[in-house]
Length: 116
Image (tube, rainbow, N blue to C red):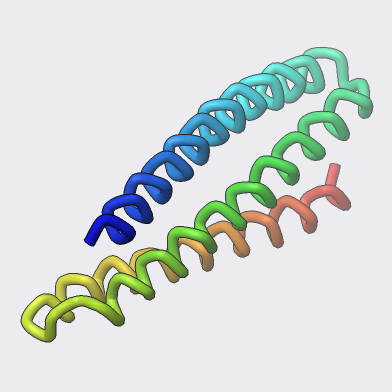
């Protein structure tokens, strides 16, 4: 029982670090938006490349964070009592949607580099 509590506390502490990383990624995206504005005003390609690099980096890191949440949710789904399986399946399915969305955004980000 003690090991299970320690494991859960470790997991929650790790997830707190992930939320801090999300805050940092949000800040980076704000910087990317600022570079996008500079590009719109000046038409200097350096600002567009910087913004694209920032957005690609944040999406890439976000992909791995959501991958962690998918694995966590799937492991919880495997251990959950059968009467809660449907509810936890929604959690796992939602995680798959988030990962799919990030992959689509990464594809878009890479594709739009060749436009404009």
